[in-house]
Length: 321
Image 1 (cartoon, rainbow, N blue to C red):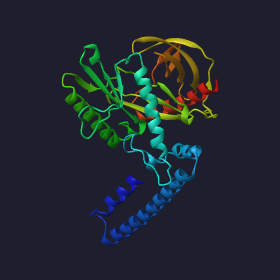
Image 2: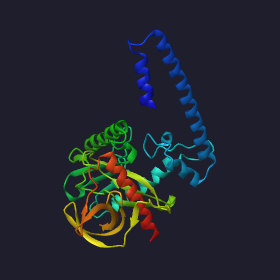
Image 3: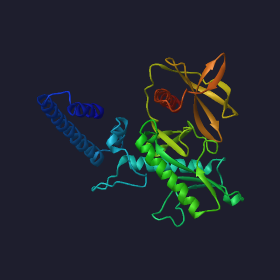
Image 4: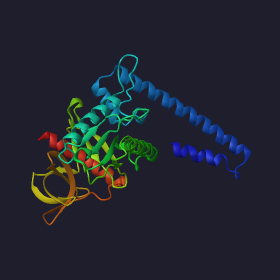
C-alpha cells in the first residue's frame, strides 16, 4: 500500500494532468491517509490490549500474525515495560533467544574457551556490549572476530535499512574492540570460524525454537527465525519419511544425516544431523541414493521462503517423535 500511495502522489505532481484532476487525486490521497491512520490506530489499540491483558498464548498469536509494529528496532536489552508491569513480548522473547544462543556459542567446541558474550568493551563510551566475540588472545594469537545476532527480519534481502543499521552497529563494535585492544587484529565474524547455518536452538521457556542462518555476503551477522515446537499440523505437500541415514558433505566435512520429511512440490528433503553436539537441520536432495546438501541460493527470498516452510514442518515432525 505504501508503494501504491507513493505512485499516486507522484502522479498528482505530474504536469500532464489538469488542475481539476490534480485536486481530485489529492482528495483521494487525503481520504486514503485518513483510512490508513484509522487502521493503524485500531491496530495499535488491539495490540496494546493483547499485550496488557493477554497471556502467553495471546502474545504468541501476535507473533504468528506478523504484526510488524511490534518488532524491536533496537537491541534485546531495550525492554519496553508497560505501565501495568507487562513487557513487550518480542523484547522478552528476543532476550531469551540471545541467552540460549550465547550459551551455544560459549560451549561450542570450535569456540571454547575463547568465546565472550555480551561483555562490555573496556573504556567504551557509551558502553558497547557486542553479542559474541571469539578472541584467541589468551593462546598467544592476537586475533578476534565479532558476531552480531539479529532476527531474520534484519537480513539484507528482508530489510536493507535494518541491515545497514546492524552493519553500522557491528562495525562500531569492531572499531571499539580494536581501540581497547590495539594489539589484537579484529574483524567481523566469518562462517569459516563459526558455521551455524540451520542449527536448531530450543527455547523451552516459551515452547518455541529458533533456527540460525548466515549468508556469505553478510559477514558477522547471525540471524534467527522463530518456529513453534508445539504445532500439530504439517503441510499437505510434506510427507514424513522413515529415518534413513546417509553420508553427505557439509563444508568439506563428512557427516551422517537422518531423513525426516520430503516436500513433494520441490523434491527437497529435510534431515537432522549432529555436528559438534548440536542438532542441525539440513535441507538437500536425494538422487540415485545420494543425499546432497543445498537449497539453492541462500540469499534468494523465494528459495529462503521454501526452506523456511520445510524447516518448520521438519521441526514439527522432530518434536512428534
